[in-house]
Structures are given as C-alpha cells and as structure tokens.
Length: 390
Image 1: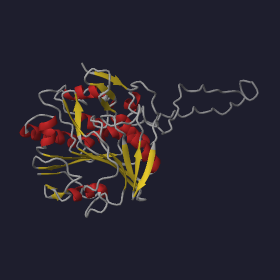
Image 2: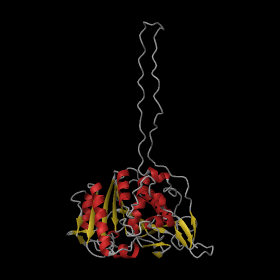
Image 3: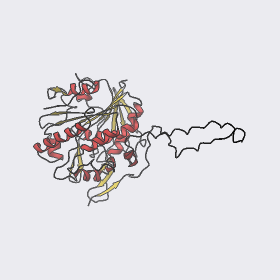
Image 4: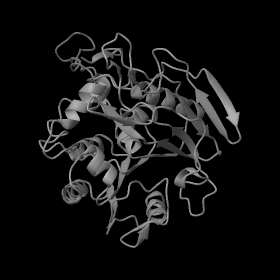
C-alpha cells in the first residue's frame, strides 16, 4: 500500500498586498439641533452620511482562502552564486523545496536591467501511482534553448530579465505530498512542486520587485504549471500586466476517464488550485477549459496565448492516452470554446503534426504560415496578434 504525507494543508494564508477598503456596517444617524432650543430657531446643518466604500476585489481570493499561498515567504535560498550573467539559487534539504527523489532544488535568475520580466517554468514529464516518468533533478543555470537563449536570432524574449524554474517534482509544479510507495516507512517520492514554485517566486519578486510587464510561460509540464503559478504571481505582483503563454499544456482530460484529473490532484494534494465554487472547472469530460475561463474572469489584466500541435504524441499518447484523431478533435473544440468566451484576450497557435513544444525549439516553426517568433512578438507588441492554425 502506498502511504502519503501531506504538508501543511491548513497553514495560514499570506494575504494580498493590496489595501482593502473598510466597508461600513450601517449609516450614521443624521442629527439635527436648534441653535437656542426653541421651536422657531434655525436648524443646524444636516451632516450627510459617509459614503460607503466597497472593498476592492482581490483576484483569486477563493484560491487564497483555500491555501494555495501557504508557502509564499517561507523559504530563502541556502546559497546564491553568480555564474556569468546568471545567478543560481539553491535551497537546502528538509521540509521545504526538494526534487522528486530528495535532491536539492535550485532555480536561476538573469537580470538584464529590463523592465520586462519572463517567468519560465520548465517541463519534464509527470509522476503518479500508475505512471512515473519525470525529471528527477534540477540542473543549475538557464539552458540556451529557444526563447531561453538571449543570443538566439529572432528570439522575441531576448533582452528581458528572467526567472527560470526547473522542473523536478513530477506534479506539474503544484504538488504538496510525500509518498512511501513500497510501504517500508521511508518516503520514496517528494511531490514538492508548490514548495519549489513558491520559493522561486519569492526569489523572483525579491530580485525583480517592480517590472512593467510579466511574461509567464512554460513548456509541457511547465505549461500546465503556468496555470497553477498564475494566482501566486498575481498575488506577488498585484498590478502588473501578465501575458501567459501556455506551450503544450492545454487542459485536455482522458475522454473515457473523466476522473483522471481529480485523481492526479488528489495524489499530489493540489486540489486547492481549483475553486470549490466552480462546478465546471473540471468538466464532466475531464477537460479543464472552464478553469482558464475562471482565471480570465478573475483577472482582467491577463492575456492568454495557447500553443499546441494537433496530435501532440507526448500529451495525447503518453499522458492523456487517447488517439491522435480524438485528441485533435477535442483540442480544436476546447480552444474554439475558450476563444469564443474571451476573443480579445485569448489567441491560439496550432501547428499540424505529432511534435511537442515550440518555445525551446525551432522558433521558425510555423502554424498557418506564421512563425513562433512572429506570433509571440505580435502578442507582446500588441499589434497583429491573431489566432493561427494549420
């Protein structure tokens, strides 16, 4: 039997930094008085009731109430070392950030002096009771791949400052569960994604406290991770515009097994990322398109770019476990539905074929005749950003 240890599910929340107005419980009585006590004396001026000010809404307050921010502000790096233009931040072992098999977690920053900040979540598989195929270590540095390479010709993110989050927890950057898989009394897997994510974002906000814009992006498992990272990023940067680019992490479930996503969230202790009030955020078909709608409704300073191949073998076959044709049909339908709900703030980039991810590969790859580099550039520049699909 597999035994699990869940970390601090009811720990105190870190509240938003936004000031909240205090709503008045009722109106003060209006008092009138005579200047000399006589019936005929002039009345004193009537004091108008104070204006009732509604509290300012905090995006994702329900998720904050459910505990997703419980590790923000909890961890600081054990060591931060400069390596060229990159600083590697390493966290010690213990109850905090860890990789899947217990190794130390490290993340990196690159400060270019830019007012634009990229928060990049790396991918690398997933791990649960039925399948464990995930990266188990966090390498230092920022790999010179695609948009991560500042020297790459045509890189639309070149010159921007960066917080780079490796992926090594097997739970899409969101888990909070230690697991004893062989019942020997020793933990075998450390799904510490929420610890790693929270610690990394604390480093990001310390290093880059006031960017004018954030590009929150990631590939594969990291693309799924951007969905979970978003409310935490918004908590730390309340007023900064966020452009979220999801590369190959669109929330398609197992069509014949709609409870699959719930199983994963339970095994990883990550269900708090889904609001209890949203009955459709995990659909009856297992898809989570309505979760993206929920986030867009909560945060009007957010734009969403979704990228995928039509028959992505890694997602369709290895994890979702549906045929390519069924995956493509579900993909197109879910993206159509999402775009129809928020046509001004959601655009999609879909290329034909079975390949997986765009942003850390060939930036000249096209969909509908538009390159990856040009599509991302148009999103960031705010001109000509449109849906393009093969």
